[in-house]
Amino acid sequence: MDTRFLESFVQVVELGSIAAAARSLDLTPTAVSLRLKALEAEVGTALVERAGRTVQPTQAGGKVLKQAKLLLQEVKNFNSLASSTELPAGPLVLGATPSALKGMLVPVLKRWVEKYPNVEVLIEPGSSTVLYDRAMSGVLDAAVLVHPLFDVPKTVSWKTLRTERLILLTPSDMVKNDPLGHPSGHPSGHPSGHPSGHPFSIIRSQPFIRYDRRVVAGKMADDYLRANKLYPLVRLELDGIDYIADMVKAGLGVSVLPDWADGNRLDPALTRHRLPEPVPTRDLGLLWLRANAREKLVRAFLELTIAQPASPPGRSQKNPSDS
Image 1 (cartoon, one colour):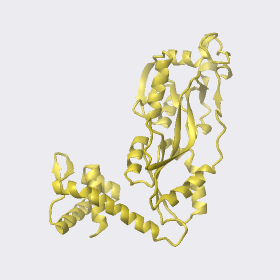
Image 2: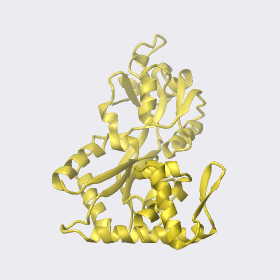
Image 3: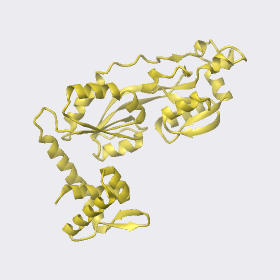
Image 4: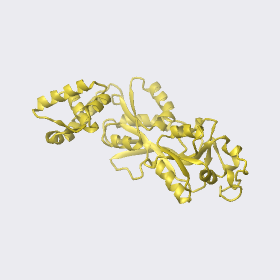
């Protein structure tokens, strides 16, 4: 049995369409359809069927789906062990959130290429929720993502790489040009004193761009605002820290975001303000399945990630008194 046919079957079932599976496998829809027909001819029964606009497994297809995934994993493990080097054979299949990929992973990947020039890395960008599911299912060898709001199971390993506080992001000239008063110099950042430059006053008075509440840090930001009785005038809500930063720069509003890894190269037109305590944090880290044939490859990547010099905490941030 050609395992490529099994791979196409699994992808079609998981993605719900032949077209989506074709994009994932870098094939034409016709090629995927031919693989499915060949597999069905070999097993002697239909494995998928159309249900409206989606494709779903037949009763027989549903029965063999789990076994097909196990077979593909065993083939992957076999190929990993068939290596002439100290590491399992590549590629390393790595998931990463867009902010991690744009920021902290670039120097790590550069060191990887220098140390392991013959081990390819396949990178799949995605949200933390999607990457978590794909890492848990074994599709990804590892993923750099935000720790979920629940404890991860004992079948996986987790290593925190960076802890990010929530900050207020504004245009740099917002407080400087405020004609109503001076930023508060109170060391605790309490709203008393001169309120015009205090983060809470800015949030109350300016249009607000909300970080999507369906993601971990977005929910944290929303909880923080509610805990401090802040109900801003929300103009936009979306996921994507870099997109939000561009919108803040364009003057569409201010936002409460995690102090993301790429923020140390912040545009001078933007300013990060520390928020009054207690401020929630999110953990960005590496997640992978324990005790599998690919773990040594993942740990080699982790070593290079840990070796990366950490950015000074709070760099480029401003207290209300600094604005």
